[in-house]
Length: 332
Image 1 (cartoon, rainbow, N blue to C red):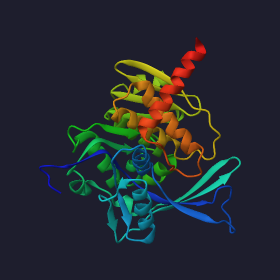
Image 2: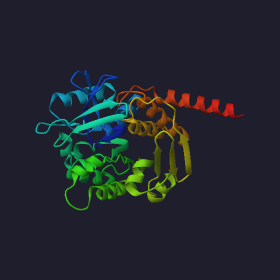
Image 3: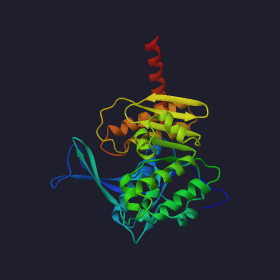
Image 4: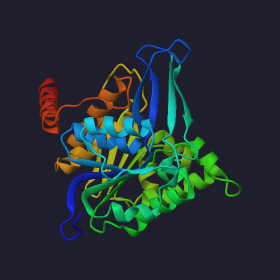
C-alpha cells in the first residue's frame, strides 16, 4: 500500500478469532448433535457488526493456513469485514471453541493454546499501519494470550502507532485466560487487574461490565468505576439487563437495557460496543450511542450466534428516535 496516501477505514479491530463449534439451534453438545461452524472473537465480532451497521471495517489478526482459518475469513467477509490484513501462519493452527447451550446457561470449552493468534506481536504492526482508521478497537482478551500479545497491546495503547486515532478498549476480562497466561508471582488475578486497569486508563474509549469491574477492582457501582478509571474521554459501564451508564467530560448519561428473550448471552458485549461505536462514528448524541449499543446487543442476545444481521445504522437511529418520541408522548 502507498504509505503517503494511506487507505482509510472507519474501524480497525485487532485480536484473536477462533472457530466456534455450536449445536444447531435448540441442540446440546453430544454425540448426536449437528453442528455449525462460525467465527468467534471479541474484536472480529465488533468489526462484523459495525460492518452490518454500514461501516467499512478491517479486522487484523493471525490464523492458521488450515480450513478453519478459511472459514473465519470467508464468513467475516460475508458480513462485510475486510480481512486483507490477516496473517496466515503455516506453523500454528486456528483455535477452536465449543459451545454447549444448557438450561442453566451456555458452557464453553476453549482449545486455543499455541494458536496462530498467540504469535501476534509488534512485528505485525508494519503491515497494519499503512491503514488509516478512525478508531482502533482492542479487548482485554489480546494481552492475556501470550507475552508477545501483551507487548503488542501495550504498544498500541501507550505508544500509539496511529498517533491521531482514538483507541477503544473493551476490558473483557476472561479469568481462565489469565490463569493460563502466567506462572509465578504476581497471582493471575492481580496481574489481570493491574494490566487491564493500566490499559483502560490510557485508552480513549473504554467499555467495562459493572460485574467484571467489581471482580477486578472491587468497585460497587458505575460511579465508583468512574472514580477509579478517570482518564478516558468516554467510559461506558454496562450493567447487563439493567442499564448502561456513559461518563464523559460533559456529564453522565444512563439508559436502561432493552427487554429481550435471551437465547445466548455470548457476544452481547461485543455487539454493544459495535453499536455505541457506530453512534460515535456518526457523531450522534450520547443517548443515541447508548441506544444503538443496546439495540445491537439485544439482537445478538436473541440469536444463537455471536453474529447476526443488523439494519443500517441510520435506520436504527430513526427507530430509536421514533421510540423516544413515543415515550415522551406517553409521559405527557
